[in-house]
Structures are given as structure tokens and as C-alpha cells.
Amino acid sequence: MSRPYLRLVTFVVLVPSWMALIDGTVVNVGLNTIAGNLGVSIDEASWISSIYVLAAIFVMPLTGWLATNLGRKRAFLYAVALFTAASLFCALSGTLAFCWSHLRRQFVKIEREASPAPAPVAREALERIAQLYAVEKVLRGRSDAERRAGRQAHARPLAAALKQWFEAKLGHLAQKSETAKALRYALRHWDGLTLYLDDGRIEMDTNAVERAMRPIKLNAKNALFAGCDEGAENWALLASLIETCKLNGVSAEYWLADVLAKLVNGWPAARLDELLPWASTYTMHAQDPRLAA
View 1 (cartoon, one colour):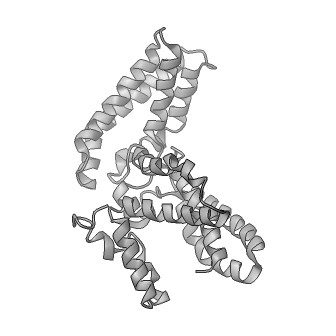
View 2 (cartoon, rainbow, N blue to C red):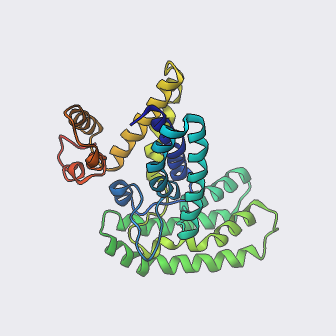
View 3 (tube, rainbow, N blue to C red):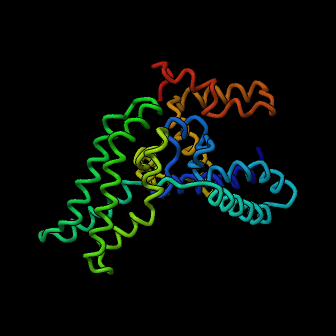
């Protein structure tokens, strides 16, 4: 892979992809599915996987050719345009699952800023959302079908009651208040917030992905001493690869050692997809304690 191609992938594909996951508005189809195929498990019911990662699938094969034939600067501009177009296509083709944690934080902020005065609407909203999370806690670790059935039986009635409560409270609040804004946000994105009820693969929030990104953020000061721009770019690539291994439950050390050994020994270019962290070659051994992430 050429150096210009690596840079294009870093800035045009990897960074926006991670930003999409952290944004708090896009929830991928189940953490296992995210790990298994980088958020591209799509069925007839929903296109929930990351818009940016989907767009990357279309753009990545073209960026190498652009970098080789058009020069780095022109290739970057063309790649950005292609990536944007692909992102819009994916966004318009699917349904987004919105993050309950993102909604919950708005009520937490309202209650905190109101203290020591009471914020009864925010407090009750948090208690009702906590009931949904309690259902999810019981279902965690079960199969997709079991999670969907449990959500339909226990979470859907709670969600329906919560929506009615939101609508009722909204009519009694000053429309410019922060609480009213939070309620309108919830109602405006209600279909996305409740999408997880109909698909056992979808998580309620993006907390797991945000936790995966936290080590990179905490390491930001160390990145100031990468030595040069090229070193920082390589650092970003390596960080993306390592976190992808973690999401798949694969040991990054084992994966890197295996991939580098195979590449040095003349692994065919036509089979590079077999070396990706979510390939069955590595995920099938994820339960091996020696190879666990």
C-alpha cells in the first residue's frame, strides 16, 4: 500500500469513522457485529451500521488509484468528495439508531445545573430511562432473538409510557427551557431511540465504543511527541488497528505478529482481506486465553 494511500485512508476514512462512532447519534448493530464486520451487517429491516464505515467501503478501493495517478493533493480532494457522496448515500438509504445515553446526559445536565433547586421533570425522566436500562441489564449477554423478545415484552411498554409522558410534560413547560429542548429532542428522534426494541443486535447506546476510544484520548499528550507529521499519521493508523482488534476480541499483539510474518513471507495481495482483524482466521480463536484481547 503506497504512502499517499495510507494517508488518505487515515484522514478520509479512519478518523471520520471513529468520529461517527463517538458522535453519540449513530449506534452500530450490536458490538459483536461491529467487531465482526466493521459495522456492515445490514439486513432488510435496518441499515444501522456506521455511515462513515459504509462509505469507506465504497471509497477505499478508489483512493489508491487516485493517489497513484493524480498526485497526493488532487487525490485527497477527490477522495473527500467521493467519501462525502458515499456518506450521504448511506445516510439516505438507512435508519439511524439514536443513543439513549446521549439523551440521558441532557437530563443529567439539567438536574445538575438546577441544584440545589429541584428539577422534577428531569429527575422523573432519568428514573424512567433507568427502568429501560434495568431491562437491558437483565438481557445482556443473551442471544439476539432473546434480547428482542425480552425488549418487546418488558421495555416496549415502558418506552410507550415514556413517550406519552414526554408529550404530556412538553405542553406544560416553557418552550425555550432546556427541559423542553430535551423533550423535543427525544420526541423528534423517537423512532431512532426505539429502533433497538425491534432488533436484538442493536445496543441502547454507544458507551462501549466510547470506552474503546478513551485510551486514545488519554494518550493524546504522548502523541505530541510523535516526532513528525508522518510519525503521527502512522500512530493514528496503528491506534485504529489496535482498537479494531479489541472490538473483535482479538489480541492486537498476536494479530500484528501474525500479519507481519505473513506479509514478509509473500502473502498474496489478492487475499489481503483474510488478514483483517475481523477475519474468521482470528475471531475463531478469540476465546483462547492466550490470544484474548
